[in-house]
Image (cartoon, rainbow, N blue to C red):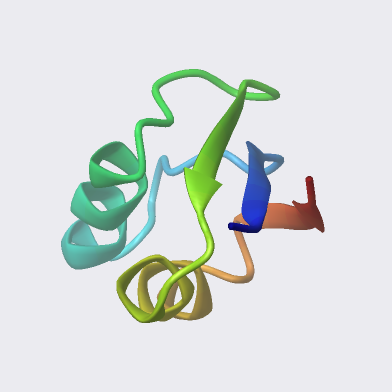
Length: 59
């Protein structure tokens, strides 16, 4: 199964509270940290919501 590497590249300071919660739910706590997540509809939906704060690569 494919995976996605998601990296937080922009701070959540000043972001919409819902977006802050989404970033945290993705497992991203600090700037420039990367997590590997399964490539499924739920993960893609969360990444789509905060696409302006993260960078996504296929792993």
